[in-house]
Image (cartoon, rainbow, N blue to C red; front, side, top):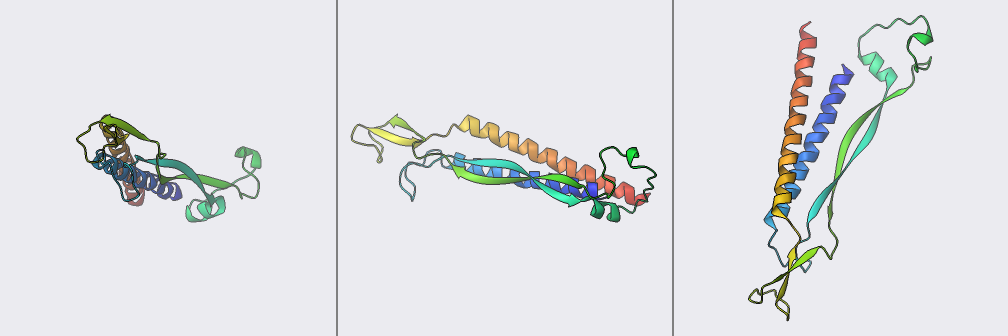
Length: 164
């Protein structure tokens, strides 16, 4: 049973990360033309750094909660398993952190009529490509849907296991 719950936990963390990614992309698209921010200068593109963190679950806890009765006659029957059953199963959970690009991440556009143009007529614009942002949003949306389907499949397996 614990495996099903950990799969829901992993998929849920993936859904959370993809939701954060869609929010970051939406913010980038909304500010693609922002030449002045509160901090000064053009808006800097935000991006999401994603990493997997392993959460360790003690095998004894999994064994006790599984309600399965295991009989072992020899330790060689389960290769790689210590005799005290004390190894840990790792569950990868996604974590994300939002970062800004560097202060020099802008493009110069010649527009002498723009109120933020410098003496030579150039305006510092955010270095945001709308097409790339849309691709990122579609990718995040599809990954979110895939994680949602994985959660649904896990819930269905759990429901079917309870019906036995």
